[in-house]
Image (cartoon, rainbow, N blue to C red; front, side, top):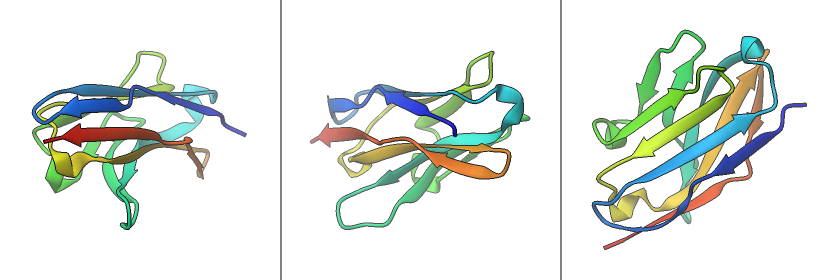
Length: 115
């Protein structure tokens, strides 16, 4: 069982920045990919960004150029740097880690962007 600990959400004004982090208890060698999804009220949970073991990244079109996903040197913590935040970025952000083919989800962290 992989445990995930998320941090970094909060309230920010439009145009501001936040950095989310998610630490996984799994060994980095077992992690295939790590990333972030988000879910706004009344909407489905959507992909924000993913980073693979090899360092390849994928972003939702809505965040390209504003968000950056990265991993620490140990390979088991993932970050999401969010710049130029917009009110439509308001959502609960969930960390996801795939370890040995199994998906694990964080508890979610609220990001609220005021206009």
